[in-house]
Amino acid sequence: MHDILADEYIFYQSVFEKAEKVASYYGFQPIQTTILEKTELFTAGVGAATDIVEKQMYSFRTKGGDHLSLRPEMTASIMRAYLEHGMHTLPQPVMLWQKGPCFRHENPQKGRTREFQQFDMEIIGEPKPIAEVIIIQVLKSIFEELGLSIIVHINSIGDKECRPAYRKELIGYYRRKINNLCPDCKRRLKENPLRLLDCKEEKCLELKAGAPQMANYLCSSCKQHFREVLEALDSADIFYVLDNHLVRGLDYYSRTVFEIFENEGSGDALAGGGRYDYLAKTLSKKDFPAMGVAIGVDRLVQLMRDKKILPKQKKQPKVFLIQLGNAAKYKSLEIIEMFRKAHLPLNQSISKDSLRGQLNLASKLDMAYALILGQQEVLKDLIILRDMRSGNQETINLRDLVEVIKKKIAYD
Ligand code: HAM
Image (cartoon, rainbow, N blue to C red; front, side, top):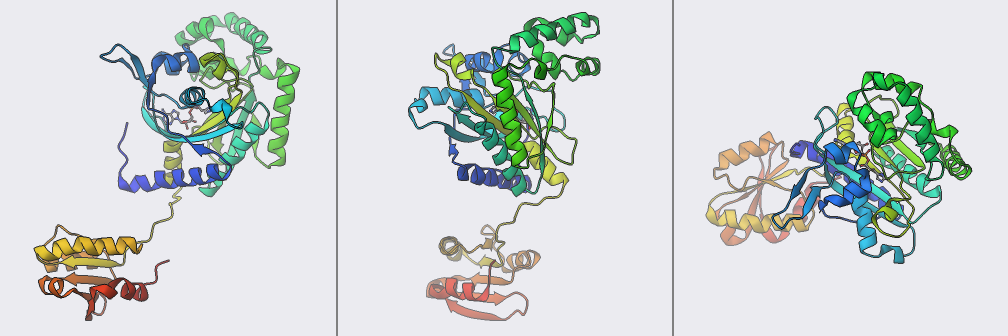
């Protein structure tokens, strides 16, 4: 887990602002679900035999006896909120975005932390491939806005009709190789065989290359659905590669699954998502097909920093306010408010006392003007405006201050 300081925060702010803007443009509405949830939401939703639930959740028992967890992801929470607030009665689909932290007790390494920020988008109530295409198009636009081009790794993992046959085939394949599997995969083979395709151990990766592929087992409706998704990506000029062994680490997925990578890079996935048509049924008695994605904002920020993609800077102040004496200190707050309301940036160091110290700071910060407020000026509602380059000074009426500054300084 790490703190985000000012230098880094501007990158996060820029990512969130761009993502919110594009998502809202496409009709996504904001939602903010709670960071703590009942543990059973994730056990049922994400899957008891996934790494996330088995090994990575921050779970605890409250004094009242409730079993709670810090959310390891947002999809289950958003579906819970959709059901709890009767959003199925709204015009469908319901499109939602959410930003904020998630928590997974993973082995920390580059691109992997225990608290991380996601920007999540979900389309609930849309069974057709258009949901996939909207989500991927919105992602493409967000990344483009940030100066990055992406490639989509995509696969279909079928539905409840066709996946059992594939699962059986996969178990058969890995059983024949059981002695070469890592201890985790030996266990996974019994509980959750699809997870074997996710294992990053060298020897399991070698076996994965020869493992059966879901594409050969898809039923006709899953095939048709996937074909439509790919055709739409083609016509939207979105680059993708078919990744026949992509399964993703969460159990709620069906049909389309995908991950987003930077086009030129070979780094970690910047985003991941897919369709989860059965999650609503798992959490309630109702069926609401859905599709979504989460962007890993920390990885995105790291990539921007590595590639030196700088967020647009806000207007930088060119004026420094200097105050001398107690009365001027308090009057300064009034002046700061005047500037704030006029949307003029202003620098100051209100806790400093000496004229020299404040003037030095103003020139260190390369300010064009200093405003000097002493006891005399406070009494007469005046202020001294000093041109920092020439050293020329003039006294102006406080009433006219904002207008004078606006005329002197053209902010972009
Ligand atoms: P996920 O693939 O587990 O999917 O996470 C999405 C993204 O979050 C990843 O691609 C990665 O960029 C980032 N991420 C995940 N774990 C970490 C970590 N420990 N440190 C830093 N970044 C991380 C989900 O969470 C699904 N809920 C996505 C989804 C939404 N599926 C449908 N709707």
